Image (cartoon, rainbow, N blue to C red):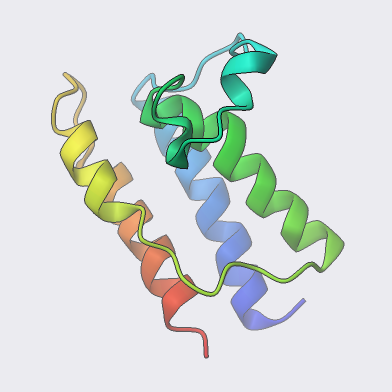
Length: 109
């Protein structure tokens, strides 16, 4: 793996750890129907933390493991900043990690 891929893998792990730390990690998966929403971020069927846990993290991890092409751009932070502000948890560290993901993906060229 390249330095970029190692940095990305570390960042994905940090996202999971932070979600667990602030109790945004769920033990039960949403329904299969909820996970298959065609809407961006499954906004109509999942919360953003659910989307991060059940769609985003597994998909990016799988792409890394398989050596598949990763997204060329990422713009998760603006939505996360808006949505996570409404939660009772201190999401500042999680937001920093999401911003770092966006910056890492967009700046790797």
